[in-house]
Image (cartoon, rainbow, N blue to C red; front, side, top):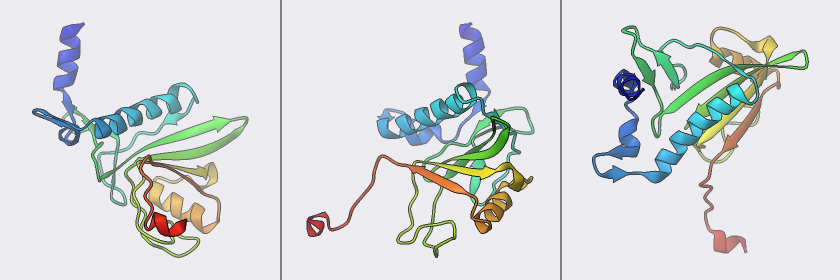
Amino acid sequence: LAWLMVDAAAQLDWPGREDAYDGTTRDVATLYEFWLYFLLVRAFRDRLGMTPERDPLAKVDGALPFCCRADDGRLVINLRQREASFSRFRWQQDGGELRVHFFYNRSFGRKGVGERGSYSKTFRPDYTLVIIPNEFDQADWNAAERAAEKAGRIAYLHFDAKYRGENLPGLF
């Protein structure tokens, strides 16, 4: 069993591991964010019954798929701080079907109302869930999101532990 674990670890390509631990450095907050991403992906699959989608190793709208196989067979994990990663799922429930896109560190720039973004400042939440109806599904998930946005049939749920406020004493 130990040999299998060492062999599997040797085949794993994860450039983002240096963000959390390198030599004697241990960034506990980043390790926690990575661990939670793995945990949530597993919970979506095992607890909620979501079916993971397979994605090629290619960047789409500035994001790489969370986990995929390289052409040489290596397992590649694209989880890295300050870089967007995603996992996509199909979720069938009570005869209906949704597409769920789960992001780590996706940026949202300043945009107008009704457009993907922020009305005030650019922000990058730790995790973002994007939920769209199945009718908008297409091979290009970014185009699917844009079509759902245009129709007003999209939901964004952002999760971040570090909300900041400016001029807090002035608010009170």
